[in-house]
Image (cartoon, rainbow, N blue to C red):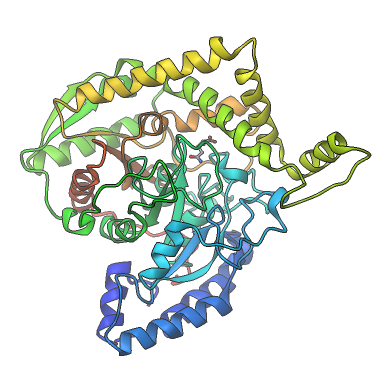
Amino acid sequence: MLAFSLAEARDALRTRKISAVELTDAYLRAIEALNPQLNAYVLPTPDLARAQARAADAALARNEAGPLTGIPLAIKDLFCTKGVRTTAASRILEPFVPPYESTVTANLLRDGAVFLGKANMDEFAMGSSNMTSAFGPVTNPWTRRGDNRPLVPGGSSGGSAASVAARMALGATATDTGGSIRQPASFCGLVGIKPTYGRCSRWGVVAFASSLDQAGPLARTVRDAAILLGSMAGYDPKDATSADVPVPDFAAACARGVKGLRIGIPREYFSDGMPEEISAIWRQGQQWLREAGATVVDVSLPHTKYALATYYIVAPAEASSNLARYDGVRFGLRRDGADLTELYENTRAEGFGDEVKRRVLIGTYVLSAGYYDAYYLKAQKVRALILSDFTSVFREVDALLTPTAPSAAFGQGEKMDDPVTMYLNDVFTVPANMSGIPGLSVPAGLDAQGLPLGLQVLGKPFDEETVFAVAGAIEQAAGFSAVPTIRADA
Ligand code: GLN
């Protein structure tokens, strides 16, 4: 049962080959068996899941099934869930139980989904390895051939990715501010899409950097990701940046093919230090698309080289402002002091981890009176140039193909000495956040050590359909069927 894709499970539920309770129980057993080892969930919610599964079976019996009725999902602990503790993997929110449901998770519940629990992540979604979680690291279910040292699942949506890869969830919600859906997808052999900014409501999603944050799904196939995004997306009057545009049938787009499409290869993404395995898989992807009938052309995005530096000004600036609300007064952790200032200091010193403190310091610095023009304002100008690069290449091509990440999954504890080494993980993913365009990672193959490598497809704003079509073609050509070492159906 755990081997079903989401689309297959949905068919099996509708034809009554399996019941929603059976499917949910199988996943709950998987969580019980593997979570102590992988730490993918910070809070499994078995009672809630069983109640939702029973309701799903009742809906199925009445022939009133929605698009996700009975489908068990993991929910990144950045999404507020009514009556269920939501922490953003931070100690500062540890006692917080939201009295409301985020719009994205409410949309999933409307469509019949079952929630298995809250997934681990980097604290406040800041990180690329899941090492910054207050609940400890997540272990990637994949290991190098002949080497069982634990690897990171990527971040910040590491728990979401590990749970889907290890068959502890059929799909998961995730968020992506600079790559946090796509990089874990690449590290765990999954499909993950960050849709266009505004496609999914941010209401009820704990804010990191509001002009960059977008929700999206992690899944085992392109079609599964398309089905999930179809439920998550949609206009929401409660989020002023939510786009009032129709949600197309993403799943139908997956099998469209790429005949006649023009695919751009941005030459600036080819960095000198790029490992041969990454450039080889990238060339392979171009070849697959040519064979499937696309025209592959060389394009230039000249401001790409500034994207990472600009991101690490804009994202911390917005984070420092968003995180000012954790003051110990209104909600979450409170550590009293002699006066109000001491209360703030004690609460924030104890509640925030090192990476979050680093971001607050950088953000406050670049926004401070003497440095605002030199850093923040300059970064905003460069951001406009990054967007205009994309706008001009999308006059010539329908989509772009790049690697998702500069490496495969690395070991737990690696890249921890110097924060900049960790930030370099995001070099290929941040441009999509800076410009708001959709980006998807699809598994393309394995490296020499048997670890998955993903390719990234970037598309025009609100043209996720073409992104899914290109990813579908790559998925078909790649025939990626490798499975992780640690998984519930092993
Ligand atoms: N790794 C990036 C960061 O730490 C991106 C995180 C994200 O997308 N949430 O900022």
